[in-house]
Length: 73
Image (spheres, helix red, strand yellow):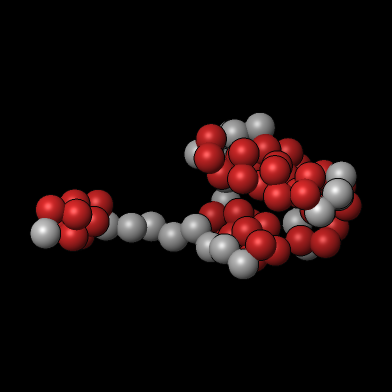
C-alpha cells in the first residue's frame, strides 16, 4: 500500500494539483485522496481505481500462485 500512496502523491504533485483540486478532478471526496496519500488501509477499491484512472492505471487482485508459477518457468 505504501507504493500506492507514494505513486498517487508523486503523480499529483507532477501535475501541480492540491489534494482538493485533484479530488475534484478525479470525482472523489477529498478524504479519499488523503486516505490514499496517508497510506491508510481501509480504502474502497472502486474509489482507488477512480483516482488511478486519472493516470491510466487500475488496481486489481492477482493470483500469486499464477505469478509464482510464471516466474519459475
